[in-house]
Image (cartoon, rainbow, N blue to C red; front, side, top):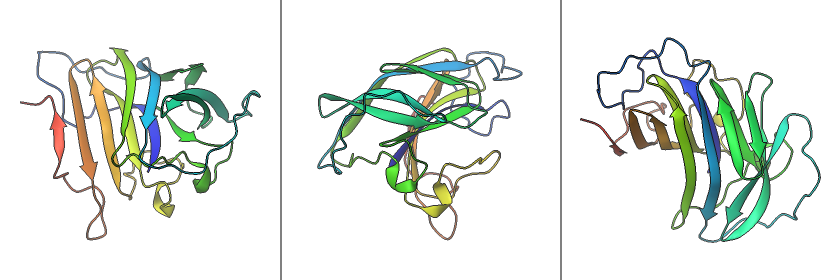
Length: 199
């Protein structure tokens, strides 16, 4: 499964994971940001190891350092023209309504998505949610990157139709993690496995 890191607008309340603390929902998430740093993967088995690239990233990509099985590795984040994102070594800052795909290479090919074997392993990262108000969501997602229905395309307003795991959907007022298995031709049915801060 590949990784997508994002910051998105949930002011319509489509995802209801926030604890009610009397907060007012933001009118817009244009100024929302989150910072994901020290992203680390411990994998059971692995894909082919890629050589380290010390050059600058090409246009449409950002360089991002992660830790894989205890060793620092250079990866790339593919960005769209509308994406508001910046990196500084092992730190990624994502502006409102932005998403990036984590990749092994500077290529939009599905085969270049970073897809470690995390079953039996783990992912770990630090996240700063101080600018994610109510209605704005910071997300870390794992998705079936080899599925033709889940490539990096502008999916504005549509739900990707592939198996996925919401490793994190969070803001200042809540946190949730859930799985989205596909069945009967749809991948947007209610998850049977949800963990979060909910009533």
